[in-house]
Image 1 (cartoon, rainbow, N blue to C red):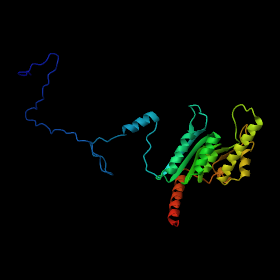
Image 2 (cartoon, helix red, strand yellow):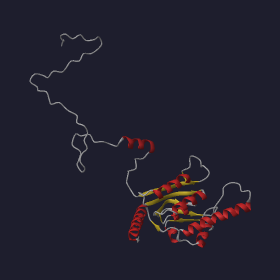
Image 3 (cartoon, rainbow, N blue to C red):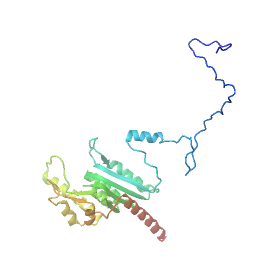
Image 4 (cartoon, rainbow, N blue to C red):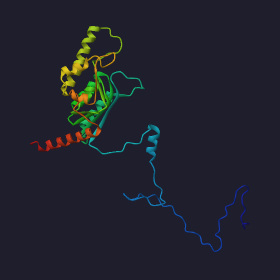
Length: 278
């Protein structure tokens, strides 16, 4: 078809509007409506685009291999102590560590935050620096707010004082705890002085554990120096209910039991505060 008065440019295809055929009425014009959110409990309307995962969630899955943690307004704070407890010496970068210089300010902030009424401590640690572990344990034991610990996987070595530092402690059926004497790695030059130092540090651990749990000093030392259970070493491995039977942990349970116990402790504290005379 030849257009009158139209001089197309060389190499450019001209735009020719489409004309409806004779006797055919043009259909109604389609309009794209903006996305509207359906009311809760209603199925999405047919033909409507259903939104998928937000971009931030997809980025988290790509970078971290997991979805975002749902934001829940809660009066309970979860404190995780995993891997190896790092003290005054920086561990290699491939080690999974819990740094005590991160934990101590966090515990101070939790003590001062009025919105946080209870602290849930999750442990899965192989132990680590003795003084750093004792510092964290002392901080937990000195909290005025209710604290509940739960051992999932393992609470070995210096993780034992951290676990019993909470007001109430749980251990999973398959979780384990290793109790052994304090060791030093490397060359020891001053043998008598080093032994005296280790003996006093060991007394600190024994005293803290026995004061914050139901195990006696004699029983804890017997577990610490027992031979035959650990290959090429001395000590004891307690699994699940065994830690409860010796009085080290309060009860066998999981995360649900720990949260329930912590809520009960929070409610009990509020009740006692209301009943206290002015």
